[in-house]
Image (cartoon, rainbow, N blue to C red; front, side):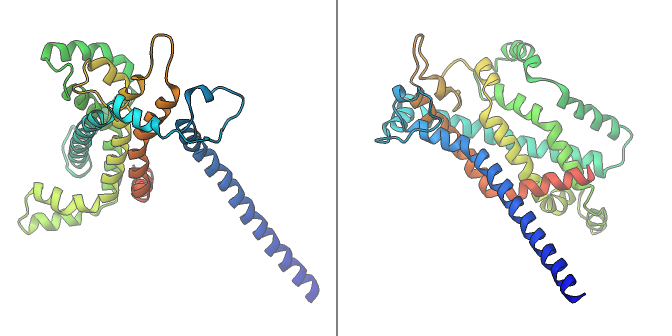
Length: 288
């Protein structure tokens, strides 16, 4: 009997090892599949435009064409477009976080008759497609004199990110004990003080999640920017890619270099804040 028990134990250990190795293999394959796009983008950004066409997925740059990045930086107006993107995206992130947090606090923590109706009305915003608002917003911004300004992008960016951001904040606020702000109010704190000095620091994961999601959405957006902006004064980074498209030809290698430069800030932000994003989304999904 002893040798049978030992054999069963050995098979159990081998089976656990097999499942662990299988899991690692699947995860490695998924990681390689996700990283392949970045590797492919970097590889093509270091080639000559004439070397991009062929049957190979990847080609070894020989020699690497670092001049593509210099050309993208200068001719693609990377720096002025980068400044515009920072101004527009930063403003959209700050306004979205403030508006979504206060709206979620009002709907989740305060008792008033229309809280459920207002919350449901805001959630309907997630069902509105961007393309359906382009023409009405264009006419509205034209009458208000906002076309070709930062506000023509900041306003719709905040509006389209507000429903999901409110959903994340509401789900997270439902996990925060009400006794915290009640104690603060009893001690003489105002409702604004309880909101921003007591509750807001606790919702740090949700704030980071909303900030990063809004940042990614606004940083990569091109449809509204191409509709509402007509001059280089306010244009954002995605416009640098189309700088190298002509009537009959295109500088594809430099376009890949532009796309690499455009994607780099997002990769850096997501790499440093990934833990908070996962925590915030998970918490909102559990209680939202």
